[in-house]
Length: 357
Image (cartoon, rainbow, N blue to C red; front, side):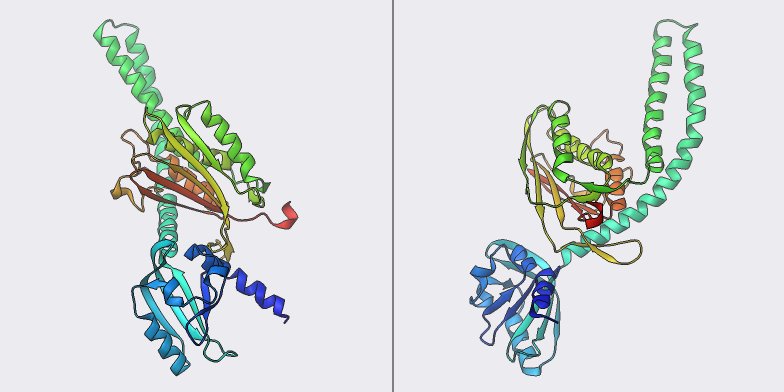
């Protein structure tokens, strides 16, 4: 194989990797490591590794042992960071370079990604079970509700005063329940995505304009787009539904007061998701929708994408579950990080295959 093949393989590794020389200086880093450490390869090469890589474990001793024994070593659940980013829990693999005596390969696997993706898969499984039961109940409940509404309307024709107010309340509340049940049924009725090559920024632009003249008119919306992003493989109408839902949530987080919504896009090659057939696929196209509201309640961490879980007092808990379902059917991944003053929903999507462009 040509040297170019190994260069491509090195740069394509989805997890941060670096090579250090016999004096524990950084010899090489891959693209994922540059992103993880928030430092360029140029600034890292030649630098003492422990000046740049901050670890809450004696990895220098581990490297010495690997170099001496010529055997690999695994270190699980340690905090790894740099001067440019906060520490993140990682599993670390350390091994020798077969053809370069004294050189060491270090692989960093952030646990936060695996944990979030594990929670996402659990939410997806829970959603399927809950949605199936909800669809059955919705179908069975709507018929008697129609009867209750009709009966209340007939009664109101022979009543007056406070009695009519009560029948009007019955009609209003039953219609509200029917509307909720129709949202539940939408999960099952959602057609399979009609996927083609789609420019993410075109869809985001449509969503932003719709939000700006409607539910987010009181908000300031700022865009930070990477214009070099390739198209994704998606149903543009369903993506629009996702973006509008997230923008609406961001606007509602501010309440009646003004606030700021940021929409960001960028490319990150380190993320991969598991397809239904067991294969793994890259989801490098990243979209973030960020608001400066009060943040999600801590007790909802890891559950916000499950059906009937809502952070708002009168929320149905269906919107984000539907968003999660749509993204999953697009072979993508959605996550959220939240703290007072900053809540960020992040969507990761695949690149469109060449034949779809």
